[in-house]
Length: 140
Image 1 (cartoon, rainbow, N blue to C red):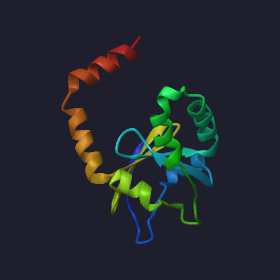
Image 2 (image 1 turned 90 degrees about the vertical axis):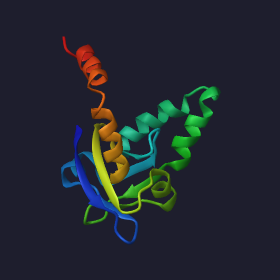
Image 3 (image 1 turned 135 degrees about the vertical axis):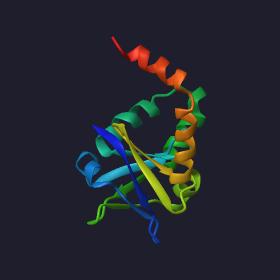
């Protein structure tokens, strides 16, 4: 299970560290792609294969969503220091130029530009009633 949050910096070669607490679950190769928010989704290979099968089964009317996800997908190998290279098109999409916040989302990671993440998080916590509604639906 991938959960938690960590902040890292993109290095001069476009690499970012996968936090040690996530590395075992992620494995040695991951798939990074554009996501529906202005961030990247990073999947372990097995989770990606299951997700890609569902994506490829989408009806033609969902082709723009399929294009967004599959055209951005890149295989990324972790190096000995636990870093992956983020290609320029993915960094540009997510607005990642230096500081990166990596958040665990259960079966995948999300990589956010730290300033964008902080802005999004402030917006979310300013709406406690909406959060309480979601929590209320989960409590038995």
